[in-house]
Image (cartoon, rainbow, N blue to C red; front, side, top):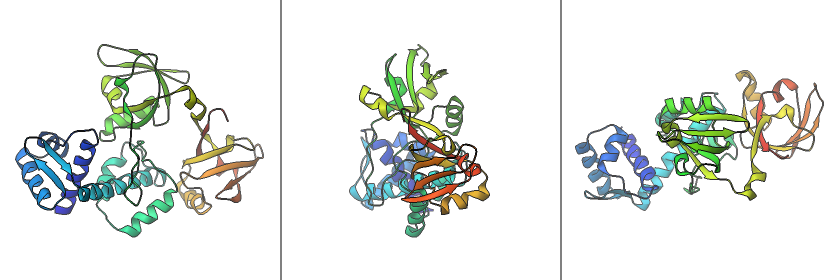
Amino acid sequence: MDSERTEEYLEAIYKEQTKGDPASTSFLARDLGVSQPAVTDMLKNLESKGLIDYKSSKGATLTELGVERALGVIRRHRLWERFLTDVLGMKWDKVHEVACKLEHLDVPEVEERLAVILGDTDTCPHGHAIPDNKGNIKKEKAVPLTRFQALQRVNITAIDEGDSRLLAAIEKKGLKPQVIVTIHKKNEDGSLELEAGNRKIKINADLAMALLAEPVSAGQRDTIKEETTLSKLNAGNTCVLKEYTGERNLLGRCLSLGFTPGSVVKMLENFNSGPVLVKVHDTEVALGRDLADHITVTRNENA
């Protein structure tokens, strides 16, 4: 339990310091649901172990050892989130709480097998970068939608994963990572009026703060991704496998054939209402329409 609590503190401090500020006792008390005196005692304990630098007037930042420990926890957390959604089929607004419990299972062999099953995926379901097994992590540059101006076109890259109610509301709006939106209007109450594809969407201030995005430049528009099913690709199309959405009893067959999330798949032949012939991991595989209809992929919208 002490080890788990230590990891929770390190994870919270890491996420706060990546925003540019030390983690204050008041922030940690709110984030972890404990009293400020309890936070102060824990920070002194972590400092004695060489995991943080702590000044009561400024807050806490991680040492090199602390960063290493924190990234290990974050890696396990985000791998488990991806496994729970992609393999077990759980909804993305439910997996954060479960992953918070599984992240403390520090068994290298289990972590390695998770990574193998998930393929080359480098983000969690909410769009946040997964540290690699050497502790390297891609720096996230996204900012809340509220920071952009009207008429800007932006790419949603990540969502604040802590609030399940917000995640459920965001999913209903269809605003998951890699969705391109145009901000049409910013209202005084903080709400935004957006357009995604041909859809008009209005979101309140809480959702606007939870959605993280980056501006879309003219040169990036050729890389906008479209989500579809494998069965709808034409011969010659290349895509990246996102998830399997069919019956769970067929999931094992998909995984054994190499259809893991993040795999690059090329359509060789699509026999209309019959099977499809694809190449995955340099192997040609024939799939029945029943499987191909339930394999979700992403491709360039201009493909």
